[in-house]
Image 1 (cartoon, rainbow, N blue to C red):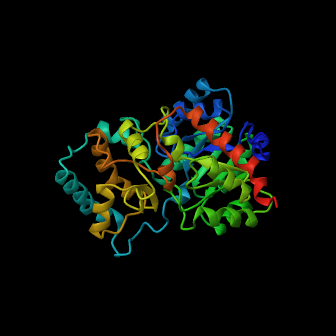
Image 2: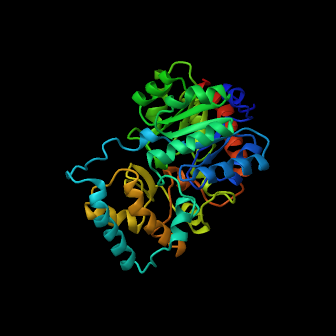
Image 3: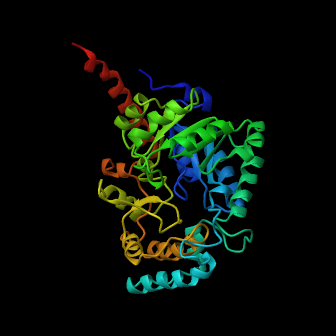
Length: 378
């Protein structure tokens, strides 16, 4: 049997497997490899400056003639209540205190304070570009202008509702995907007119939901009528792909399994951390972006948890965390900067080519689904 659903016709792909738009990891090389293998590659462009985003799109077009997409965050995903924190103090007022905490942590861990170049690399920007601050509303809005001007085949909103841009995106023929973590958000983006919804459960890496994947997928399926749904969160092998399809999904959105590939844009020591980790190795923390995100547990996540500090909203919390992560990356410290990953990382045992990962996901799902009839035989 061939693993094929209506999603394949909608997006112009061969198998209903979509690369998650993982910021900094889903590079042109990884996105093109997934698209060339028959899935849909997505660029993880959340931290890309508008100029770099345009360059990434151009490079991906050089590497593949198949459809691919771009994933960013949206301006509305930056917290609207930035004026004050729960303590009653403004985030900008608290920022120096939090940065001192990060500085003290780096000193305690004997990490060199990163220079401007290291910080720029960690944030995915180039020095001297100018423009709005990274992870600000203005930054995300500028990215959207690039997405529209470049007329990409698929746009994915990793956070937020793309409704304000839908008319212009659809006018370009762009298919629009929205990632949600709760049924109420699924209903909202469905009413806005998106083409595909990703139901990403609590098991997933990066920004995620309070609802488990197994419970979320069928509830989103029931809530959005006939709209195509992708299942996501902890899906790292073909058994997970098959399970998502049986829960009512039309395909899957896979991240962590593609992090442990040669093409992924993370460092080798971070790929090692994924291969070495297990089901116990991740935590949900707000210490990096200010929003709940599943990451590989580290000394930084532990120190933040023990500090009792209230996370700051975007873009302030990244200003605290980025120097720490950049310092850990420069020092190749997997105990400080191991990266994001979902709970499926315990099923990943080697770093492999992305095309091989995609083929194995599809082939195993086919075998599992083909054998399911045995369960109903008397």
